[in-house]
Image (cartoon, rainbow, N blue to C red; front, side):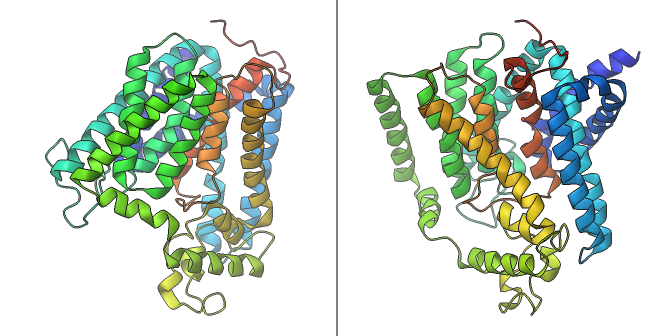
Length: 409
């Protein structure tokens, strides 16, 4: 009975990409339930975890990050809010361990199921978003952008994150295609093509730039003939310009990449001042929204106010201090170094594993506006590929394993 419940819990993981479309509640429930399973694994598989170098290091740094958040909560501007959210952050690390063991138990099945779920989700989102772009209502005939022109949100309703959601899952999707059992190349290509059309039409500047990272790596990975790459690029450009000929609103929004909002710079300035006031542990999770119009930190009144400063690293500095910032930034730098090293300085064949690191680069990219780092919905996406990274590190022997035997294909 216990084994059946544990094995069935993988479906909570499969459903997360679908649940994310509905809002923060359902993915948060799924992640919380899986984090309880993580506690079970820490109790029942503690010898495996602490004898395995990769899992042990992950556990140590996770615990360190958690302790830093708790300490920050104690000294926070709003102790209750910051301490509670810091305490709950442990769920994401427990989730990673739980899903790792579920993947390790039956990698081929998990790879197959998740790949087809993501294929279905990306195709439906793309078709719906493209339909909405031209007909101003989604496939359920519900108007979603009646009060704001030149944006599409598709199945996300009033949230303008359809492009960002898509761009965040592309790296993992590419990894899943090239691993496990053989998949249909044509379906994969169509899904990617529709996804990139959707990202462009969404007009989301950050999503468009981030989505270029996995596609550029893909060109290196598959070693296409140069003429073939030119042909694909030309075909995509023709499609984009044809769409622009019909309606140039997406181009108008993307032009803002070279002329970002002045409000962002005001928020960045206020974030730095908040950080300098409490550099070790920050002012606490979700503190920016309470301090952004404080005359101690801002001369802009509420002109620099928002729920967060729209940059992951400035938010970490302001709300959790220098130590949490260093841990997250080190993960980004490590991922970037591994990708660059494998692409340009390695004689070995490039592994699909590289797309998992590209997902971390996309999720933690420092030079673009971002969602709230401590927003549960966003964190579910950030941590979603981590169990696969742990699995691949151990499987490939990058870090010596202590008794874990990866399944044979």
